[in-house]
Image (tube, rainbow, N blue to C red):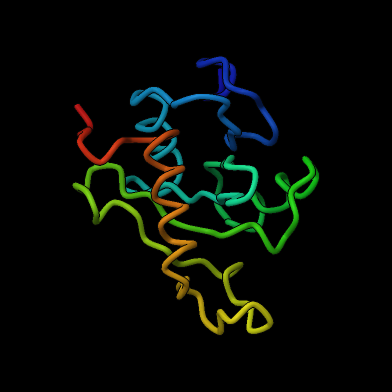
Length: 134
């Protein structure tokens, strides 16, 4: 049984989830173990305030969100380090973030407003700033 079936989260691609509400810690732990042990890749739609989390590539989650109605210019990739404390658990880097036309010439998100939106959405759907993995 894969992660999505086991925890009843919308399945959009094997082991990439689009949560409608906060993900349980045990699901986050399984996603981390599945791919990178200490980190989970995810893509945030900063306009729709949704995420696609899991998988090997940010581009896969980006594609899923675009197919779901997101606009590419609203999508930003990040990495979630589950066992790090706040604020070090979010790394704002991904290949999909390279967008000179949007003022972002490299992999790291430069716009502080976008980073803040990602942090707020991440705290709502993943782990709050005062929460720790148990």
